[in-house]
Length: 161
Image (spheres, rainbow, N blue to C red):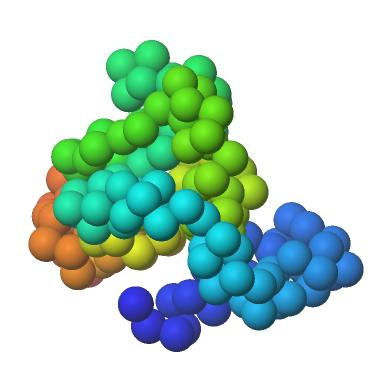
Protein backbone atom coordinates (compact mmCIF):
# COMPACT_ATOMS: atom_id res chain seq x y z
CA UNK A 1 0.00 0.00 0.00
CA UNK A 2 1.38 3.40 -0.90
CA UNK A 3 2.46 5.89 1.72
CA UNK A 4 0.05 8.43 0.20
CA UNK A 5 -2.80 5.99 0.75
CA UNK A 6 -1.75 5.35 4.34
CA UNK A 7 -1.48 9.09 4.96
CA UNK A 8 -5.02 9.61 3.60
CA UNK A 9 -6.27 6.81 5.87
CA UNK A 10 -4.74 8.49 8.91
CA UNK A 11 -6.24 11.84 7.90
CA UNK A 12 -9.67 10.27 7.44
CA UNK A 13 -9.39 8.53 10.79
CA UNK A 14 -8.31 11.68 12.57
CA UNK A 15 -10.73 14.12 10.95
CA UNK A 16 -13.30 13.77 13.69
CA UNK A 17 -10.88 13.74 16.64
CA UNK A 18 -9.25 16.56 18.52
CA UNK A 19 -5.62 17.44 17.67
CA UNK A 20 -4.45 16.52 21.15
CA UNK A 21 -5.95 13.02 21.01
CA UNK A 22 -4.58 12.50 17.51
CA UNK A 23 -1.05 13.28 18.62
CA UNK A 24 -1.41 11.33 21.84
CA UNK A 25 -2.81 8.16 20.26
CA UNK A 26 -1.84 7.92 16.62
CA UNK A 27 1.63 9.38 16.34
CA UNK A 28 2.95 8.09 19.63
CA UNK A 29 1.44 4.66 19.06
CA UNK A 30 3.93 3.84 16.32
CA UNK A 31 6.69 3.58 18.90
CA UNK A 32 4.67 1.23 21.07
CA UNK A 33 3.05 -0.76 18.27
CA UNK A 34 5.75 -3.41 18.05
CA UNK A 35 5.89 -3.55 21.84
CA UNK A 36 2.12 -4.12 22.03
CA UNK A 37 2.09 -6.85 19.37
CA UNK A 38 5.14 -8.45 20.97
CA UNK A 39 3.32 -8.71 24.31
CA UNK A 40 0.72 -11.06 22.79
CA UNK A 41 0.83 -14.75 23.51
CA UNK A 42 2.85 -16.24 20.60
CA UNK A 43 0.28 -19.00 20.04
CA UNK A 44 -2.56 -16.48 19.88
CA UNK A 45 -0.57 -14.21 17.55
CA UNK A 46 0.13 -17.12 15.20
CA UNK A 47 -3.56 -18.06 15.15
CA UNK A 48 -4.55 -14.53 14.19
CA UNK A 49 -1.68 -14.17 11.70
CA UNK A 50 -2.82 -17.39 10.02
CA UNK A 51 -6.43 -16.21 9.86
CA UNK A 52 -5.76 -12.74 8.44
CA UNK A 53 -3.06 -13.92 6.03
CA UNK A 54 -4.97 -16.94 4.69
CA UNK A 55 -8.02 -14.89 3.70
CA UNK A 56 -8.12 -12.13 1.08
CA UNK A 57 -10.52 -10.24 3.35
CA UNK A 58 -10.75 -10.98 7.07
CA UNK A 59 -12.97 -9.01 9.43
CA UNK A 60 -13.47 -8.99 13.16
CA UNK A 61 -17.01 -7.91 13.92
CA UNK A 62 -19.60 -7.85 16.67
CA UNK A 63 -22.02 -10.60 15.75
CA UNK A 64 -22.27 -12.81 12.68
CA UNK A 65 -22.47 -11.72 9.03
CA UNK A 66 -26.15 -12.72 8.90
CA UNK A 67 -26.88 -11.12 12.29
CA UNK A 68 -24.55 -8.21 13.13
CA UNK A 69 -24.87 -6.88 16.67
CA UNK A 70 -23.47 -3.42 15.99
CA UNK A 71 -24.30 -0.72 13.46
CA UNK A 72 -20.65 -0.24 12.49
CA UNK A 73 -20.21 -3.98 11.88
CA UNK A 74 -23.41 -3.94 9.84
CA UNK A 75 -22.10 -1.03 7.74
CA UNK A 76 -18.84 -2.88 6.97
CA UNK A 77 -20.82 -5.98 5.99
CA UNK A 78 -23.10 -3.94 3.71
CA UNK A 79 -20.13 -2.25 2.01
CA UNK A 80 -18.36 -5.57 1.40
CA UNK A 81 -21.57 -7.17 0.15
CA UNK A 82 -22.26 -4.21 -2.14
CA UNK A 83 -18.85 -4.78 -3.73
CA UNK A 84 -19.57 -8.53 -3.96
CA UNK A 85 -16.67 -9.50 -1.72
CA UNK A 86 -16.18 -12.91 -0.17
CA UNK A 87 -14.72 -12.62 3.30
CA UNK A 88 -14.15 -14.55 6.48
CA UNK A 89 -15.20 -13.16 9.83
CA UNK A 90 -14.71 -13.71 13.52
CA UNK A 91 -17.32 -12.74 16.09
CA UNK A 92 -15.42 -10.95 18.85
CA UNK A 93 -18.45 -11.10 21.16
CA UNK A 94 -18.06 -14.87 21.49
CA UNK A 95 -14.52 -14.71 22.83
CA UNK A 96 -13.44 -12.04 25.31
CA UNK A 97 -9.76 -13.00 24.96
CA UNK A 98 -9.99 -12.50 21.19
CA UNK A 99 -11.73 -9.16 21.69
CA UNK A 100 -9.10 -7.80 24.07
CA UNK A 101 -6.08 -9.19 22.24
CA UNK A 102 -7.21 -7.92 18.84
CA UNK A 103 -6.95 -4.37 20.16
CA UNK A 104 -3.23 -5.02 20.82
CA UNK A 105 -2.69 -7.04 17.66
CA UNK A 106 -3.91 -4.23 15.40
CA UNK A 107 -3.12 -1.31 17.70
CA UNK A 108 -6.73 -0.25 17.02
CA UNK A 109 -9.12 0.08 19.95
CA UNK A 110 -12.48 -0.44 18.24
CA UNK A 111 -14.42 -2.92 16.12
CA UNK A 112 -15.00 -3.84 13.39
CA UNK A 113 -11.46 -4.38 12.15
CA UNK A 114 -10.84 -5.07 8.45
CA UNK A 115 -7.79 -6.81 6.93
CA UNK A 116 -6.92 -7.15 3.22
CA UNK A 117 -4.35 -9.83 2.41
CA UNK A 118 -3.07 -9.83 5.99
CA UNK A 119 -2.74 -6.04 6.17
CA UNK A 120 -4.82 -4.04 8.62
CA UNK A 121 -6.99 -1.54 6.75
CA UNK A 122 -8.98 0.06 9.56
CA UNK A 123 -12.50 0.19 10.84
CA UNK A 124 -15.88 1.23 9.56
CA UNK A 125 -14.92 4.87 9.06
CA UNK A 126 -11.91 4.01 6.90
CA UNK A 127 -13.79 1.44 4.80
CA UNK A 128 -16.71 3.84 4.35
CA UNK A 129 -14.38 6.63 3.23
CA UNK A 130 -12.67 4.30 0.77
CA UNK A 131 -16.06 3.21 -0.59
CA UNK A 132 -17.35 6.78 -0.95
CA UNK A 133 -14.21 7.97 -2.73
CA UNK A 134 -14.08 4.98 -5.08
CA UNK A 135 -10.72 3.99 -3.63
CA UNK A 136 -12.11 0.67 -2.37
CA UNK A 137 -12.57 -0.59 -5.94
CA UNK A 138 -8.86 0.03 -6.59
CA UNK A 139 -7.71 -1.52 -3.31
CA UNK A 140 -9.80 -4.63 -3.96
CA UNK A 141 -8.28 -4.90 -7.42
CA UNK A 142 -4.79 -4.86 -5.85
CA UNK A 143 -5.63 -8.00 -3.88
CA UNK A 144 -7.20 -9.74 -6.87
CA UNK A 145 -10.87 -8.99 -6.21
CA UNK A 146 -13.02 -7.40 -8.87
CA UNK A 147 -15.66 -5.20 -7.27
CA UNK A 148 -19.21 -5.40 -8.59
CA UNK A 149 -19.10 -1.61 -8.60
CA UNK A 150 -16.13 -1.44 -10.99
CA UNK A 151 -18.46 -1.70 -14.01
CA UNK A 152 -20.90 0.80 -12.51
CA UNK A 153 -18.10 3.33 -12.01
CA UNK A 154 -16.83 2.76 -15.57
CA UNK A 155 -20.36 3.16 -17.04
CA UNK A 156 -20.91 6.40 -15.13
CA UNK A 157 -17.60 7.79 -16.36
CA UNK A 158 -18.33 6.90 -20.00
CA UNK A 159 -21.91 8.30 -19.97
CA UNK A 160 -20.79 11.62 -18.51
CA UNK A 161 -18.42 12.24 -21.44
